[in-house]
Image 1 (cartoon, rainbow, N blue to C red):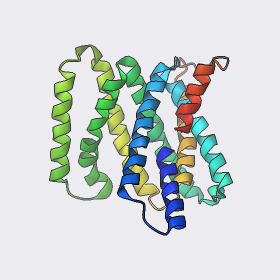
Image 2 (spheres, rainbow, N blue to C red):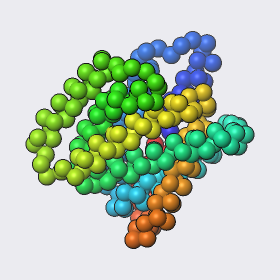
Image 3 (cartoon, one colour):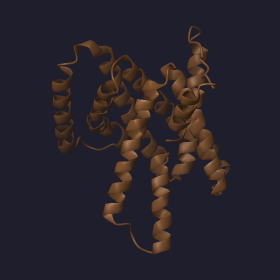
Length: 239
């Protein structure tokens, strides 16, 4: 959502000022996004709810928020072809799975370990690119990914107590890479707001399906009398 808002902010300022944004302002905006993005995982770790429940609330709130913004900005959300809607919602299932695995990773280990695991995303992208984009393996990307793996192995050699969390973190990185590539193929020419909206819907349906297929998995309702928990969930959904 933050990235979508950043793109829109760039469009508006470029239209008003008639010039490209300076690199300085772009870097500031991008770093701000990264800081808030990292904070969302910390907030998710602090909220005492199961990982899959967090994902359900996060994607539902995000879907409503994006839907309202799309309505206010008069975007043609419902005029998208059904085939494209289905593709966007399908890519949203990967996003939901990525969120679930990552939240579970940081709850089983530490936020820092989960975030470090995300460094493996470039390697997975490099390895999977030939299957998604029908291109040859990039030696440069493989090399950079290998550096990430070596760095991760050094870090994890001192974290024997969090093997399960590390495995979940690496698996979330794999799913994240798949999500990014499917999104780039499916909706590269679509409005980011509309794409995100339908991905949130697809993610919510994915979580509902998981609850339906696993009878022992009970949905834990948030304590709406707990102000901190409510603020945390809204923060997760909006950012």
